[in-house]
Length: 83
Image 1 (cartoon, rainbow, N blue to C red):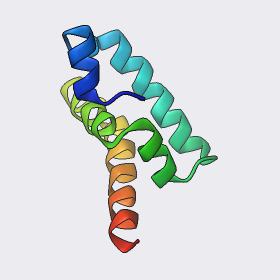
Image 2 (image 1 turned 135 degrees about the horizontal axis):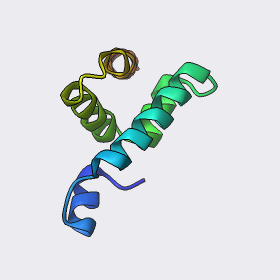
Image 3 (image 1 turned 45 degrees about the horizontal axis):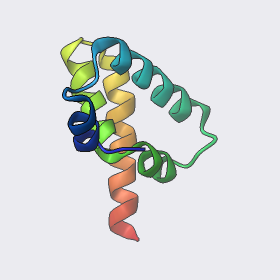
Image 4 (image 1 turned 120 degrees about the vertical axis):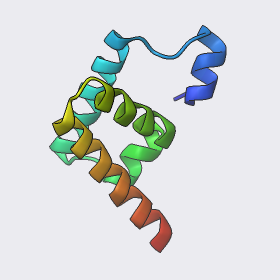
């Protein structure tokens, strides 16, 4: 997956609202399914993308989504520091 910077360089702008909604739903679905360890999910998805989706969902006041993304990022960072 391309980084957020690469996406902006290639497309000239950040993802639109429709894309952010879709990515948010896919990310949350993956977290809630629990089939992929959080560290692998964040590494595959991209920490920068997870941060961006957290900001997006804060802006549209989707606080339940924010909590899920925030907790996933927290778990990822704790795991990353331990290993």
